Image (tube, rainbow, N blue to C red; front, side, top):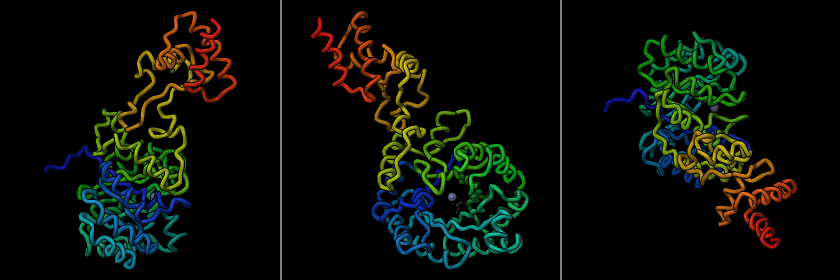
Length: 388
Ligand code: KIV
Ligand code: ZN
């Protein structure tokens, strides 16, 4: 089958980068449940853990490898033999195993983390890929802190690891440092200057320290990357990772970008809630795509426009991401149109004068009560009937 050049592979790291968040640790059965749900979602790669880090993480990679069939199962390592041995061992039941190895690529990391030199780090990177290649065919290499790395050195590293056998090259913006133009330009430079780049897929892995992870990932994809790494709900170290649902829906909504994924978007809401509850990490109400207010309309102007035609204020249909439904929330900022909508839903069809009177009573109530429910609305109208 011919490779589709516009297909973006989705690499989920909820169970590795996401699970590193303090308080979000999961048991192996919980990870298996999420992995199965990720498979149903249609992700291409599941990063199941960092096997050398603990016996529990090792066992989770083993069990996830047994539990899923379609996705590639990936295990993270540093660039050393012990880590790679553990990863290879943990992946022995995987139908499609991948080892994800790598090392720092910025001068900051080379000097202050490894106390080393560019030359030595290059040798370690190449050796790690060659060693991992003895166990599995599919090797992803990460150039940690690539967002701050010197671009010429980064290109040299990428070329060397591809020559050593890397099938995917991950260009992480580990510290969420880049602006979208900078990150996009970085990917474009690699695409245009690394002579063997067509032998590997470029992957984008962005962190959200400046709130730019989704924008940076999209910039990377628009400049030639074909794998995106992220997590459900954008969970992850510090301000989090790229939120998979945001990238997937951006590509779906903006067809002009010309890229697509294999994600069953209708499963998004369900997995978002599962990850949130299992990881004890609430989703902020205004979170794009999956927040509880993502499809709630509350101001009078928006409600009126939405009720005339939902596309006035809705670029995504809630059902396309499995969201229960759009809601018209009644607050003191709501207008007559929204009140009429809810009263009719409850079976009350008022004429204009009745509606005006009900609206006046509604405003008094809404100024004093935050949450207007169906009971309140019924009482509002019954009060009027009782006083007729
Ligand atoms: O952010 C990062 O650089 C990482 C790597 C380990 C891939 O998570
Ligand atoms: Zn990361």
